[in-house]
Length: 175
Image (cartoon, rainbow, N blue to C red; front, side, top):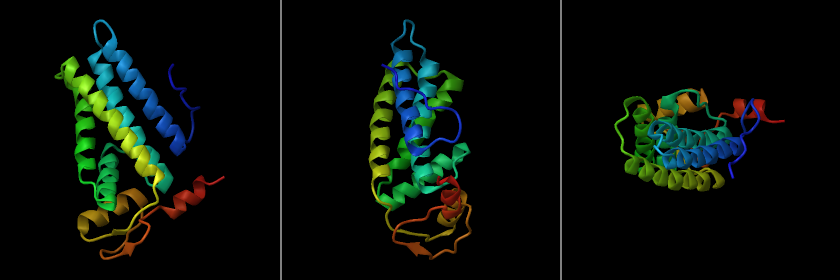
């Protein structure tokens, strides 16, 4: 059974996660075809990870409209939760987005990519269910990252026990 696609419009964190799950299901279907549709399966891997990251971004009111925003989200979460491998997992998923255009990956590599994306999406779902953690802006890169995600210019050295959210955006999204 295929996960239902949410209605069009602003997507909630749950909507993004449902889309992520749907893309993983579709990736499996595409790679199982005879012949396998490697390009569509590859793009679904990236889409699944991007929507799982969007789920967390929506929870926190973060901006996430550009491809590079997903790296900002991963870098932020990597620091917040002490999980540096999150960035390489996004890079891995992004390599399948690149494959959509380049057609370089074999079917077995794409199947392995789907497996990795499923684990990563489950990990992101778990992180999204946890309270936000401590975050301190220690350098210019982190300051730029927080600015990209929240739209706020926050000085280096600023720290928060429960991380940085875009309060103005959260207020606009509330019912």
